[in-house]
Image 1 (spheres, helix red, strand yellow):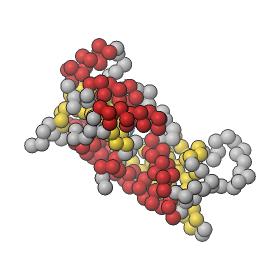
Image 2 (cartoon, helix red, strand yellow):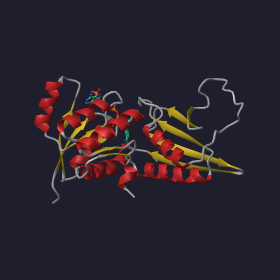
Image 3 (cartoon, rainbow, N blue to C red):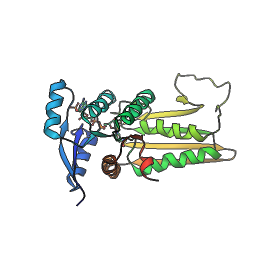
Length: 250
Ligand code: NAP
């Protein structure tokens, strides 16, 4: 059997964390060593680390705690697999630099579902040929950040290849502020929050006489687990930070 990997989970009792613990229990190579809770003092964190001795920390917590968890992993030499969204682009860049300097592997993925990764890739490809685009993301109403990390990542991937273009009528006027959504590099992102939703995204394109829509739906949180499993097994052999699961599946 492959070498076993010790995995602690921050947020193990949350909606995503519970799925992660179940997935770990079904894979003999992965050992769940406990729920890391960082809401105590430094000493409490040190004691938890001593007990759990994790190789990897899987983080599904909150946008408020994820930055600190990245710092704790650096401090203890643990490789993080982070699904929590909400890190700012500046924080991401800072962590990329610090993990590179430390020679420590890390994976941050705004979406671990393979279909969502494909949605992003297809959207980026389409935007080369159909640059008029809008993103609509739809999530459950317990979500803290907007737009979703997935929408932000999709927008970055589109902006990297799409010709510069300011969409819509130049004299467009919002009757209610925010009606046209958030602006990102000349195109719009809309966030919907409703009970009953899990994680959904539609990327809409328009051109003369035609439209194209690319849609992905996560209808259960199990959809993210094959990606989390793959990331845990990959990160133990890495020595820098990657942002986005697409870097593992080319
Ligand atoms: P959730 O159900 O609210 O779970 C969050 C958990 O984190 C709770 O159990 C909470 O504990 C715990 N927590 C909060 N602060 C903590 C800290 N400092 N240390 C340890 N644990 C702490 O949220 P969720 O739906 O699982 O989502 C979690 C995150 O994952 C969100 O950012 C969401 O956007 C993201 N997400 C990512 C993906 C992906 O594929 N990347 C997919 C789905 C969701 P208490 O309940 O005791 O406060």
